[in-house]
Image (cartoon, rainbow, N blue to C red; front, side):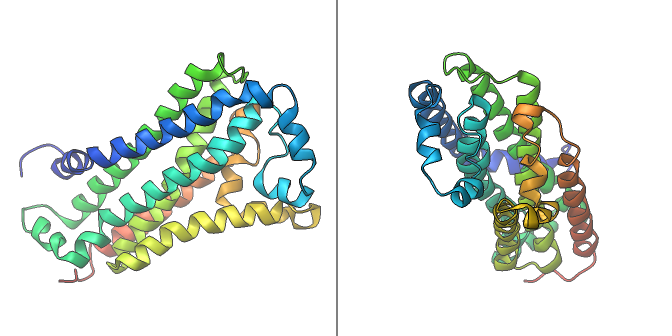
Length: 265
């Protein structure tokens, strides 16, 4: 193969339909939820509904700031439906990068075409991250388009900081799936690792919201690293970089092992 980044280009070419579908899903969520804010969020009705809910549930769902435009977008999209959609995509793409092809026998066929294991791992990982970055970029563009009509009051710099945290959060799930795929070659383990880290992060954040005595749980939650400092209102947070640091460690570990272990037939 003489083409520059052949596996990266092939991954993007083969996955464009899926990427289009996930992009459409995010667009539907954004255009469904955000325009509703002026009708019942901006006039205080939504806050009144939230005030009637149990405080523990409100804290768990992150609805305590839902009465403001940034808080509404965080609670409905970046912290919930957008997080779920992008995480599902990330885990699926991460599992498909190594483990899925290894279990169905396609991986050895690819490696027989003059590419190294390290190259395959790196280029497929890059393709997954580019697709996730695209989803984060789409969210920025659409939120800015709807910002004024929906009376959200979001600053562009704060939105970019949130999108970076959003990308880092879902990329961590993808990194876990890719790394475990590289370590084991097993689809179930890869899928479980990617989904597990997302569920773990969300659960630890929800538990940490239950009171000051358990607030320390946020320190161990990737979800909290992304959103605990409310980047959509306060801008950049240093905790965001923990997401990228952990993802890098996982990916390097998976790359090192994948280059040396036997590939299952």
